Length: 214
Image (cartoon, rainbow, N blue to C red; front, top):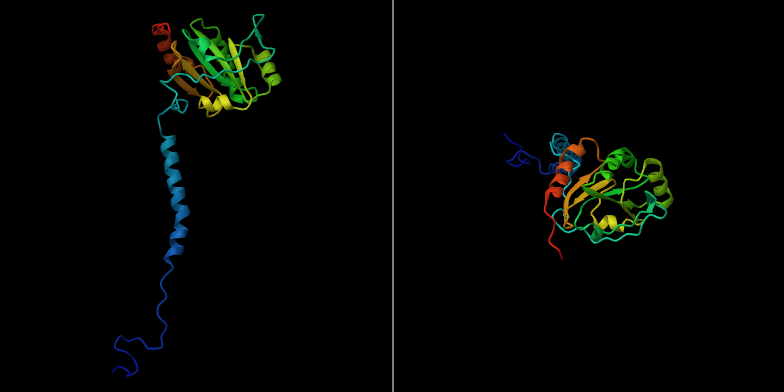
């Protein structure tokens, strides 16, 4: 027989109501774990990707190169003649390879032998953009490793790098005879690059007909 003071539900009238579990605290605890799991999945997908990380898409590809005009590197010469500054208009009618580099950039030292090879290629004009560098350091860099460039412009504040969509040095662009950006390569050029997609882009640009006269 039930006690008269106890309601039909079997709970004494003075008993405290059950406290609901703190769901919000549990969700907050799980958020970091969820975030870590998402990052781990993205990392594994990137790790297993077959895409070449040097082939970063660029909005410039297929468009006219930025009309960036840069002053020359003071004191730089090639074959006894002063090396001019950077002006894409001067490359029209030629296939140009534009390399963004700096003396403080360790990968730029790694790729320099490949640039020396490119600089001797009669099919192209190799031009450089010296990115956020000190002129004296840049001059010593080329004096020590050799100057492969037919033109070098100085970009002390990185403004030209912004116009060209530079992620970080070194980066290399292939320009067709009509001044259109045909290809972008991110990272140091190596021997494989000179026989891979980069070399293919140069060959395609060389094979194209001359642009019509303006």
